[in-house]
Amino acid sequence: MSKIRVDNLSKVYVTGKNIETPALSGITLEIEPREFLAIAGTSGSGKTTLLNLIGSLDAPTAGTIHFGHTEVTGMSKNELAEFRKDHIGFVFQAYNLINTLTALENVEYIMLLQGVAPAERRRRAADLLTRVGLEKYLDHFPNQMSGGQQQRVAVARAIVSEPSVILADEPTANLDSKTSEQLLDLMLELNREKGTTFVFSTHDPMVIGKVARVVNLKDGRIAP
Amino acid sequence: MNTFAKIALRNILRNKRRSLITISAVGIGLGALIFIWSFVEGAHRQMITNYTSYITSPVQVQPAGYQTNPKLERALDNSAALDARIRQNPTVRATSPRIRAEGLIASSEASVGTVILGVHPSREILVSTLNKRIAKGTFLQDGDDQQIIIGKDMATNLNVGLEDKVVFMSQAADGSIASGAYYVKGIVDSGVTEIDKGLAIITFTAADELFVMDGRPSQIAVQLHAVEESTQTAAGLRTALNDPELEVLAWNTVSPILQQWLDYDNTFIWIIVVIVMIVVAIGIMNTVLMGVLERTREFGILLALGTKEGQIIAMVGWESVFLGLIGTAAGLFLGLTSSLYFQETGVDLTIFTDALNAFYMEPVIRPCLNFKYTFLSGVMVLATSVIVSIYPAWTAAKLVPVKAIRSI
Ligand SMILES: Nc1ncnc2c1ncn2[C@@H]1O[C@H](COP(=O)(O)OP(=O)(O)OP(=O)(O)O)[C@@H](O)[C@H]1O
Ligand SMILES: [Mg+2]
Image 1: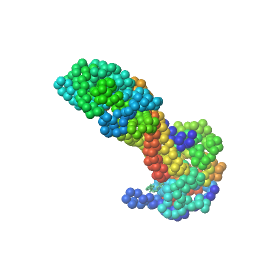
Image 2 (image 1 turned 90 degrees about the vertical axis):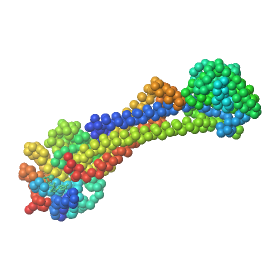
Image 3 (image 1 turned 90 degrees about the horizontal axis):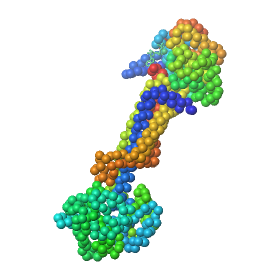
Image 4 (image 1 turned 60 degrees about the horizontal axis):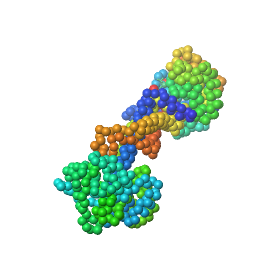
């Protein structure tokens, strides 16, 4: 597990006829291993942009990101795919799962890319789905599960390959408050149990109240 | 099963109707292609069989140079020994020595130019089927040395009927005048203009006497068990006989025009092949591309999870391969069953009889399934379906994860 260092990170989106939208400016941030960190901010403040950059799904306009001693910014597309597979877990807002795979197969997928043996894969995926309370849904396809159940599968999928960090962009946005709270408690438990770093964005006060550290974004900058 | 193949297969099943339409397009295209190829192959075989069962036989053995300059004094010595050696070849079914000449045939009212054949009737009917094309009267029999068979157009032009007398005039092999009178015994209606208008047949004995040939035939017509083996048999006989004084010719050397016509016909089929391939290509490309575009977000997630470009390409490629394979299987089934069914029953084109006759075809055409072309069609369709997947696969692999995930 290694520290994540974000240095002077900026992102400017260029759309249409050279219209520039500065989304992030000069973000500097250190995320310690095992941290449970929320990024808060109003709509348009740059939360998604920051998570995407940390997750190497997009390239910054300026600045660097280090995972331990490894600089992620500047890797090739295939190197990044490799890096994500081994070090980062993702949970998106909704529609996270591969529709043609069952819950079990979705959770197995990253281990498959990593070359984990089939029996081992199945055992770990089934264990984790049981852990998140979905032991009866192993063979269900995403469209046979509720939104909350799908998000739990997504969390299980993110954590199963034991990445150093899990990035979640408004994972509770599409869930009712009770389900949101359950999902958050689950993530907190996994954070404590497995020591996985969690970084997620939210503007849900309930979520913010449960988190040890909150980074506030305002107009693409870290607010004091 | 490989997970990428599994995902591909489930994607095909996910949109059953679209997949089914694509598979049908591929299947019907391939099935039609195989059937057309069998049909044309059958028609061609029939044309060759019919063509080679009238005057030009599958193989002819004649004196060297006869084909370019068929002079009467060019004739075969020791023809009985030669004939025996030709018959030793196992693909040879029957042989018939013929005297062939050109001259003028006249009735009391008119005269026309003609080719005249002198044949042994009992042997000729084993080589040629012209005896089955007698519209009026009967074919010659051995000993009918005063009788003649002529074509129906010639009969009209000369204004003669059965039993009427015609006179044939030409020059004999020794340079003397050859002239003989014969009675019409039969009138041929083959549907082939050059035969119906310009061919007369008398017995070998009559021709031998008329042209002073000393029993020497102009050529030996060779009929085979399988007409497809004409070229190989001609080559085999050429080697076996090993005589520079002889020429051994297969029908397609004697009649390059028919061969050209068949080749032209085959070119036409290739145009159909290209059209079918385009239909297959568009069908599969459409299905796979639509599938990719409506799954943009899913590909984004696959990429975010660490799936590599090559693996995405494999996933999309498998989809095309499966669609192509199922379509090819359906096409083979359709093509084979339709070809085999009509191979038994024949395709009845009686309404086009006159036109068909002129091309040596019969009103009922029996398709002939050709393994080579069937295999080739299947491979081409399968290859096409894989090749067209490159573009959609590339589109999916080149997606940028963030943008893909954003588009719901
Ligand atoms: N692909 C893009 N092209 C152009 N501008 C973009 C793009 N994505 C985001 N932006 C802009 O960048 C800024 C930050 O957007 P971002 O999506 O990071 O905000 P957010 O904090 O996640 O908002 P929300 O809470 O609504 O999800 C916004 O002004 C937005 O309009
Ligand atoms: Mg956002």
